[in-house]
Length: 263
Image (tube, rainbow, N blue to C red; front, side, top):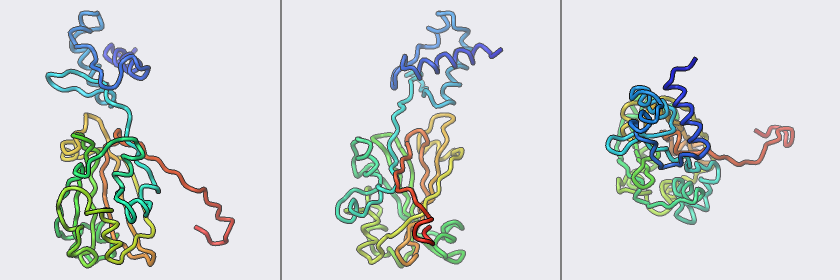
């Protein structure tokens, strides 16, 4: 038989999923559930802790326990990199996600720092650089309003970006069209990308920076960006709060039987 706190947590979770408690709504105070015969203070507190660990609620001192919003941003796939968005307009990737999600945005919701550093091993490997080589690291924190959504750090070879807006730490994208437009204007037109994503437990610093609730995992993204001749012009590592994004892809289904060596 499940302990009483588990039974209470499961019952409340079902009510949340059924819409009896809506996103942003406070759950009853612990003392109210105790008075209603749902168990002791310790029982109710344990149930609320379980719901928080499962990502269904957030708790804060002086406010209470609130049902978490369950409408994540769309993190669109191929179309977020459409050249027409950034080459001919000003819709950089994080803005493309907001537009696709029907959400508002401010350019200043992306802050950043830029530094010249010794390339970490994965960065040197992606760029084909020797150990100890220097790269520019452009680290961004992206927010939706006051809530952080993700970090993204792009690493560039100095000869590709020295003297460009990419190394300017001013908040917001690197000018009209962002970093891809800067590379385009410098003669490095992006042609294809490789992305790898995986989930993991966040570090203590990431919990603080992204304001993650207890038990929230992160999704880490590794993006390698190439020109048509195979030159790597950006290697980026992103860390995304898992519950704040829904990853969405649409693409033509390949048929390798057509065209012989098609990959």
